[in-house]
Length: 132
Image (cartoon, rainbow, N blue to C red):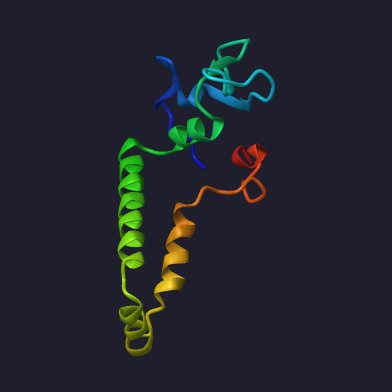
């Protein structure tokens, strides 16, 4: 991942910080709650700031351009609509697509749903992988 320099990153509750000055993100384990999700360490501060957003969301904003975020959200929406449309196909049409067109609707539904499913904890990269 490449940190986009000079980008203002929203930390929550009206707080913003420059992406290239953030040097560490630490999820809050104890005392976590509304407004207390992540400790954000900045090069210019001795104490961490408390952010109301998750470390994953903050990191995503640090490396992704706003237009890319919009395009990703639009792609998620389109995939969701496609999953709904495939789910509405009749059993007869599913058989015809499979037999005549070699198009396995169930396989595509599962594959598309996998794109929208959040990454499970055991599959998620550790935070140290983000800064390697």
